[in-house]
Amino acid sequence: MRHLTKKGPREWAWSSSRLGRVFCCAVLILFLCPALLWASGKVTQAIEEEEALLRKGQESQARIDAMAEETRQLLAEYRDLERQWENLTIYNDNLEEMTRSQVAEMASLEKQIEDIQVTQREIVPLMLRMLDTLEGFVAADIPFLKPERHARVEGLQALMGRADVDIPEKFRQIMLAYQTEADYGRTIEAYQGELTLDGKVRSVEFLRIGRVVLAYQTLDRRESGFWDVRHQAWVPLQKRHNQSIRQGIRIAARQAAPELIQVPVVISEVEP
Image 1: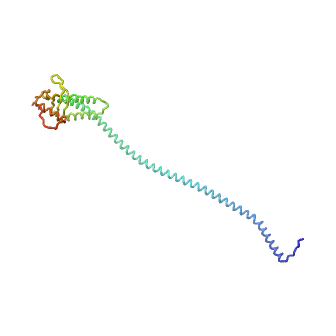
Image 2: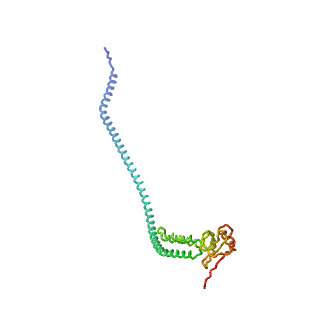
């Protein structure tokens, strides 16, 4: 058996006090638990609302960032379009200036074409007259390089009838022929050719000194002669002139140094 001991008044008082506190705590807990649960729910709800606000803030910030990026891109596109517009404005201004210049140049070219057409109508007859003059001059000149010179004139006459050669080129060729004929008058030349004497064709060497002297010498150097412009015929020379003609031929062929030589010169007489 368990022995019960009696407790004194103090012990009972202390036990009663402790039991009271425990009871009070229990009662307090019973009253506070719903409040705590309610407060805990409020805190959770507040946290959830705060999180929702944060999510909305993040979404709003994302939309703001997207709008800012779009605005930045639109601004960049606007500035790029503005630069393009400025460049196009400058380019168009330049095109307008070029167009005005081209219009003026076209007007000038049209005027030049009209002038060229007038010039062509005037210069073609002139070139034909120049060819006739050249042909007559070659025929009347002393008879040196006759085949070559006649062929040159005939080539120019054929050139005048060609449609694939423009007028400036035709005129240039005619002037070149005139220049060649003019050069004959201030040059000395020696060349071989054939000469008909007494009905016989003979190979000779010709000596031309400008248009003053045209002489010949046979290849055996035994016979010499010259062209008499008064009689339009070949005239034989005395044998004493053979050495002078030979020396002139050597000088013209650059086989000897230039020196004075004696050659026959016929001075034409002009009747009053």
